[in-house]
Amino acid sequence: MNKVFVALLIILVLNTPAKGADKIRITVSGLSGQFMTFPLAQKRGFLKEEGFDAEIIRITGAASRAALSSGEVDYGTGLGSNIGLAMTGLPIKVVACYVPAPVLALVSRAEVKTVQALRGKTVGILVFGGVAHFAARSIAKHFGVDPEKELKFIAVGAVEARFAALTQGLIDAALLAPPLDAEAKKRGFNILARADEILIFPETGLVSGVKKLQEKPDEIKRAIRAGIKANRYIRGNRDGTIQFIMEWLKVNREVAAATYDGVAKAYNDDISVCERGLRLVIDETKKTQKINREVALSEVADLSFLREAQRELGNKP
Image (cartoon, rainbow, N blue to C red; front, top):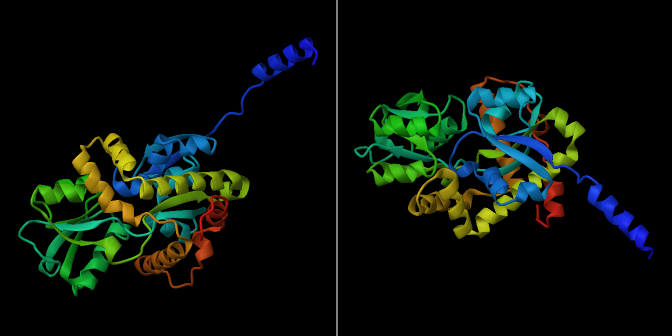
């Protein structure tokens, strides 16, 4: 080959700009075990593998939903309240489930030793109509307690606020996520029940705007793939995930291990479980929002991207 041609080819290759990674912003609602899919995907390089320069942002409640609907962020990870908003016409949809059951424990003060003993007492939740509220009500019903008549729910806010209210004696019980459930137990509080052992009700996944579904389907599929890779890592690599939790939550190994053991079994991107759970969320939201019309699954979710991503990664639906 002509030496001049080779030299020109090398110069051309060296001066050809590499394709830039797609910049995306993903919100998480809390620093707790059930929200680690995308923080871990970023730390372990799964988002980068899929061509993303991702920013993980913690935004809670209404601010998170407003940012998603306005396009200030690309994806949300909390499902419950976003499903409710989709049912009222907000142009967003669930495109994947990663934790199809609430990773929440009902934790009580030391003197309250059973769910039945909570009758007439206060229970801290995030917001009325949210996942924690539904989980608490479901646990109560499971143990023969009428949540509407026999419990007093207080919307305390994020899990850290609920933990603080409980440990300061301001409420009698609260729904806590790992690692704060383990920390509460360590301080002498009682874990009365775990929601993921009682019900299916998707807590975290991936939510996108309808406009992005229409304009950037490949981006959505790649984001889902990054989440699936992270879930596989979480389920299959205990030591590596515990190390990640230590760094992410800034906790010691004991707390990180308790967090892992409390959440790992709940990570599951099985579409059939996701669909059943989403239908339960729809039914529950209809009750809380007093919606009388039929609501199709397609109004709040499009799981076709998840199916494609699973096929491409060799997952069985």
